[in-house]
Image 1 (cartoon, rainbow, N blue to C red):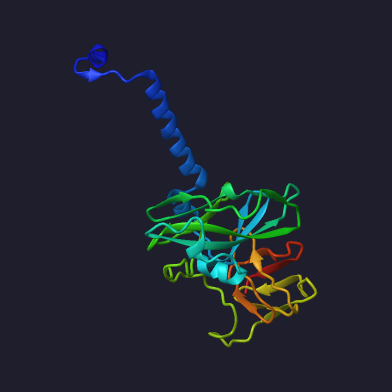
Image 2: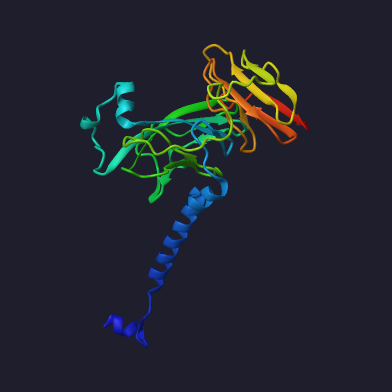
Length: 284
């Protein structure tokens, strides 16, 4: 009787409350897709890689590694998976993503578990499974490292981690509890001399929390090498504006780079943001 009363020319009139509800849901979904920057943003900006620093509101974020959950418990002496109160659902794998937030601006970087999402091909953006710690603010020039626990369908490809408000996401590679997710090109730079024995034109040594030659000038095409000689201290050589990134260099590690375009390039250590340097490339 109610339906007949709302029909006209064979079409049912949609109640106003239902129309408003559907509209709100659609807008929320569209907003979430734009907010978390799914495939469209990734196609435009490209995915960062593990060890590469990406800009986030107030500073930088770096993914240091990915480990299956069982390894997390082995390393921390925690409860084995078989005894956990929330066992992994069938068809899913659970893994930990090690993240470091570095504050480079006066307001600092906000750590809130809900700011992080993991998604992928056919996998909706999902927040951490169990937040490790409460929300906090990382002060300027400080850093905070946390491990975030996620779960995703077994066999999911090209999983990525995003931080709300960041222009780029990070491709997650490694053992996610169900095998590797493929090999990806990490750029044209060299993390040592294993594949290239040419001598560098300039060597910058990292020691005492600084670059021994903070400002250098080279000709286009010159090979520049950074060597971490800071005993017991890891560092990075990270160029700004989505430039080359050495990733985390342990003591004794090196990073070789060739810059062909004349320009002034600035870089820093994302672990210790006060460490900065400049490379001025002049025509060869």
